[in-house]
Length: 493
Image 1 (tube, rainbow, N blue to C red):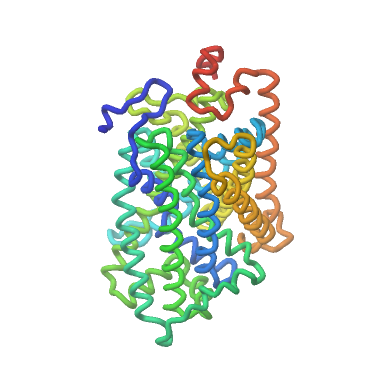
Image 2 (spheres, rainbow, N blue to C red; image 1 turned 90 degrees about the vertical axis):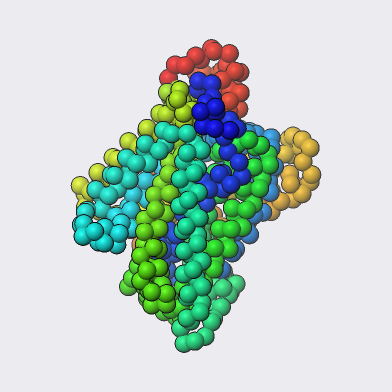
């Protein structure tokens, strides 16, 4: 279906736009493989001092695959661009759903805006080729403007841009990994960083959090369900394939880097070289041409992730505006492209304000915006995954539908136990993840902020029940909420 033929009715997202490949491009680009390998993994090694990141990716991938069984089953029953919000609302009650939605908005905004802290570092080698030296915030502002413009276009246009960028960055990761594995330190290929014993060592919560950050975005398959040609099939296949591919690529790439440096030296090398580590290894093994290609793709990887998270955040805002949980203007779409017009615009404004604030204050964009923003976003998404796991169990317990016991009871229950454990470990080791002292105010201040948002959202849900009962009654029903209100709430903010 062409973009022109797919403009939806006013206030609605365009349906029938996306197939499995395009949804996966959004999901995998949001996960931003090259940015994770070059930035998150190396910063994770440097900050935590723990080498077992490769096995952590495989462990988290297994947990998320179990979670996805119930998640996909729920998607067959509830199609909503709000995803976590809608599922929690339908399973644990509308106030809990509103609380989840506020956490989701904060988490995805933290992830998306945090990427502006990495764009300056990613652009330095590329700008050096043309002898241009720009402050990080100038590059970030330009990127924010570009992403904002793309956010107003047809969703399939964004998908085509992401498809090209994603294919190239995955290819370069594989080439780099082969180069590292064929040039092991001491001529010995070791599997030490893949040892499952690392999952039982002190600080494992930090390792798992870093791994979760690499997967963030896989859940967005459901966010685009209203715009797919076959929601049931598309969401199912895209979710499973995304988790499997991400887990495999991350484990391979991080293990290969540890092989090239030697497991005992990977932490020190990461602290010394940061995001340059993977490119230094490639340069010594493969030559500078492939390094320059990788550096350019690192830059486009960050931009691709910005585009993907921007679209996800805008659709969450749209879903909440459409149901009048947030101001109604957020639920309006572009008459020309059917993109969530104001949800996208608000996301762009937030990005500009954060960039300017960091620039004026002189804060470290790579650590305090990119890494800390990613850590906070990952913790928020992990909390949402654990809560959604409980919601899925409760939903199917009260309404089994036609799902087999494995999908509606066994797998979701296992997911509750697994995701709850991972979240508890991540929260307990959050100081290690941030690289701060255990008594640092940031150690509990950032998680407390997410908890405060959840409580505020729940309270707002109860307020809606009292003052706007017709809005409250349709929370979590997506596009059907508009029809259900029968125009009583109109289009008023």
